[in-house]
Image (cartoon, rainbow, N blue to C red; front, side, top):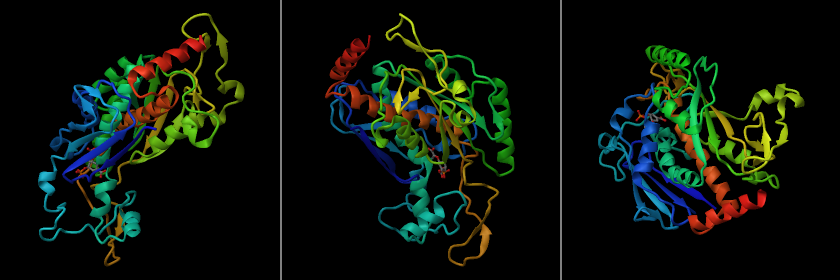
Length: 385
Ligand code: EPS
């Protein structure tokens, strides 16, 4: 079983992650991870924090001479902003810190404060912050590398921000798709929509407001049969949805046509099956409305997932809230924040999807070394053809 843990507060000294269960021999270098971290930091609509941070992962264990050892891989991403928060986030107190006493609607603030019995909302917001996704992307990059080693590639793009949605999407291979999306400040492939999204972000910033949106993750090169139909917690669609929903601010997940499939007739929904004597497996589909998953398993078609992100709850023109000591009606706490982080969330989406797929891949083809996984995969492909 592949698993990971992260630790760290948004303005603490550093974020750390431990990934366990990777086969030995996987080629791994920090620059591969750092490339993914740079992608996550981009995007029109981010706030002042991203000018401070230049995220880099340091591998602390589990890799030697550029190859995974099969032992836990630990990594560290330092918070540069820590310098400005040393006193307020000190492990050993050195004086008083002004507590945060007004919860922001839509944030973890109020429920977290009540749940843990805190007298300072900072104790909640520091960990509930999406800053944690930096180390998630770092850790999940290793899973991504494993998938890439076996020809599985992951890409993403933004399909909506605020009221703007992309109209059409051309057919692009995953490497081209990511190249083009990374080129766009909002990771959008439709130039007209891109302009409109930027304008919406500008307007929201001026109005002290924030915006959400939708991103799509596409995975190609998947073998048939990852996941299973035999038990609820082995169904890959459920596992992918859980991973995407675990990203801060995600409120909805779709697979393939998703909610649209509820309104179609069976004849307009299901992807008919054909058999042609070409390619590695003879079966083929001419449509992919299922989004690459049937019965909780991959069916060999590209995996298509979408996630909806709500607008960030920290507003410079705050909503109504309550002072937790005086119980007076006041405006919500203001923190420096982003106006829109959907482009960054799409990179986090790629990362968490990579983790779930790598886990499912190792369940089926796993071994102690990458070589052994390769042999298992090759055998299965041979059996199928
Ligand atoms: C976040 C608030 C902002 C974001 C942060 C997530 O941070 P700050 O309060 O320091 O301005 O920039 O995101 C990141 C730091 C990051 O690396 O993505 C929040 O409250 O969730």
